[in-house]
Length: 211
Length: 100
Image 1 (spheres, rainbow over the protein chains, first blue to last red):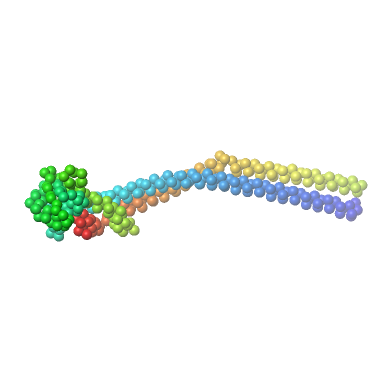
Image 2 (cartoon, one colour):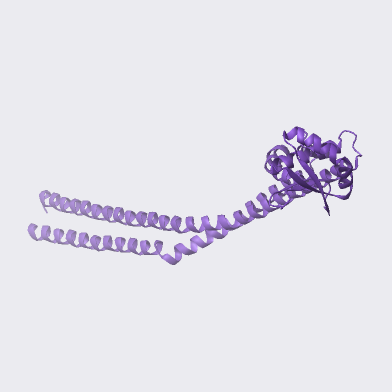
């Protein structure tokens, strides 16, 4: 064979190798792309499915713990409020009995009547109280009438109800036909104040101990 | 003579190229098979299930910690010192009696 023929044969082989290399490279590139795209799509599907399920699971498990925890916290707060109420009730009992030298209960009683009378705004009021206060009011009725008329700025007549209220202290005041009733009992005021304080207590008392 | 040798070499080259094309098709087919395996719904769901189980375990631990923190807070509330309670009672009593 001449060297020219040999050269041509080598050229044919070289071109064939080049073509083969190109074919294989392209095929591998395409295959890699197919697999990579599939992996990406699978990842998206996985994330989509896992995300929604995880969200539900998280809400269910942590939500339940949060609810249980809040319930415990609420129970503790209620316990403390109940304790405060108990102590306050005991203190009020002592005040009503006159065992607390710092407070004159009769002055308080008058103020409760005055507040109720102003609320009722009638020329005649009927006062209902517990046995002890009723006795005090009956004895001092004229003086109270005078004091009240002066404070309100018009004459006012006071009558003491025959009924005895089962209350710690304070009064229930109403007009003659009972169309207007003003509850100014100590228990009522205490409950009202505790309710009012509930929110304040939350921030004032509990925050300090929850920090 | 030379021409027939060249034609023969050319035919051999074309045959090799043809074989490589078939091999290339095989490579693509294999990739398609792998794609089908990767995108298999059941396989993905199995992996999701496994992942969710792992996460559930972690979330339960987190939930326990969360509940524990609430219990600790509740305990701190229950143990509020008596002087602090007395202070609040004083304020309440003043308001009940209209002394403010």
